[in-house]
Amino acid sequence: MSNMEMTADIVIVGAGIAGLATALALHRLGLRSLVLESSSYLRVNGAAFTTWTNAWKALDALGIGDSLRADHPRIRGLVSYAAEAGVQTAEVEYVDKSTGVEHEVRCLRRKLLAETLSNELPSGTIRFSSQLVSIEESGHLKLLHLADGTTIKTKVLIGCDGVNSEVAKWLGFKKAAFDTRCAIRGYAVYEEGHGFGDKFVNFFGEGFRSGVVPCDDNSVYWFFSWSSATRVKELEENPLKMKEFVLSKLGKLPDNIKDVFRRTKVDDLVCSQLRYRAPWEILWADISKDNVCVSGDACHPMTPDLGQGACSALEDGVVLAKCLAEAFARSSTGEKYSEEEGYERIKMSLSKYAKERKWRAFDLVSTAYVVGHLQFTTEKVISFLRNKFLAPHLVTMLMKKATYDCGILQTST
Image 1 (tube, rainbow, N blue to C red):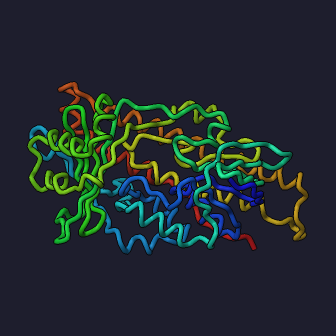
Image 2 (cartoon, rainbow, N blue to C red):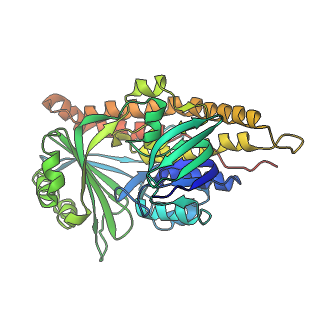
Image 3 (tube, rainbow, N blue to C red):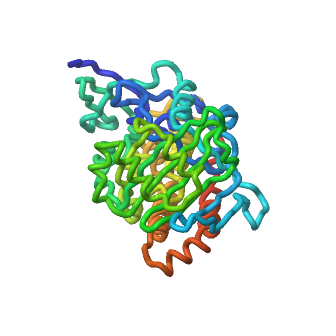
């Protein structure tokens, strides 16, 4: 056990997408942060995720958009199937009909994103094997007590520590709720090329929804979600049964789609029950309090039905860094603010961040929940309407949610 004491102006708990994006955004604005990661290495949950226009604006603000684009071709639209019949029910392009502008959509590998964010940070920014166990107040500072006995004094504490966030708990958030649905995720590799082109293939069945989306020319990401959590423990413990369960549900889908699931290695499967934050809690609870705030899944875990979970975490990082940069800016005379003045400026900056992000998070979480449960109906009439008409309206909604612009990172002169 260590009894070391440290100080850092800004401490970020969690080296996931939200934490790394926030740290890099702060770095671009000239602010150093310390990122605490409980794992001994850079952990990545899941294989990939769909990145919409809003996420690419955030990645461009962070200065890493172009390098990631080079490895991830554009997805131009969505093709929808009814699994039972194996027939195509809709095809929609990712083009805003009101403006004629094509949205930028790609399937981004999580590991590559995490490594890219991490590699752009100054050496020593991430402190691994650093699990936060308690938070203590000490005047205008927060004392962070770690599992290894280390104590860290900080002016700003940012919780990016995921759905089971200790920082969110300290702020008074309840535990994230469990949805009635579960999801299995995986990816398949095609050394000879997969041939899926540039479309997101989406399909519905009785009580489930699934999708296949190319990451690049040789790899395909997929998900399968269903509306009963009764078998999740059994499947989590037996990846082979997990794979068999998915294959048993694919009905009369084309063989090239079924092949994606067949060739996926069982070691590359992840199964979990979906979780979300009740939308009204986001409105009523404190996203920020004094010099503490939360972002990403620590703030607004959501079901994956809009594909905006990780995208909104990237937004959080850029917006939060811009707000904090105002707090840490010197006075007009170039002098540093007093301790009391600095504390008040930090409180105001985090309050500004919370005000901007609260309604955005509420909108995404609530819309994702409603859309998700509409897609999982077992009523035959509603299923027919879903298969025939929902896909185009869903894509329109997805594109509408992706118009958010987090802005650029610009250092003050």
